[in-house]
Image (cartoon, rainbow, N blue to C red):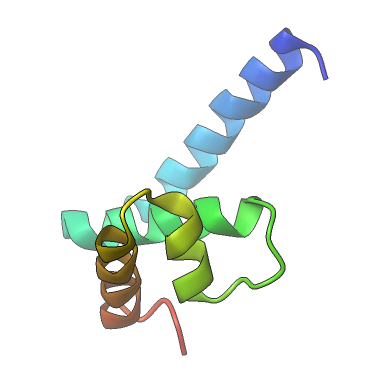
Length: 77
């Protein structure tokens, strides 16, 4: 992909993400869904909350906290 195509894709994905989270209300719910959706798009075999959270943050404690928020707002069954 060219830089222009990547830039366009980034804009489109950002707009899509905003449409997905706009009705969630609380900021932590919005952030949890943003992280989860981002994680689904990343490389990685496991797409459950814990592995996704671990890939998205540098600090293990932060990953545990992100996974806990995702579970609390119902992003994992």
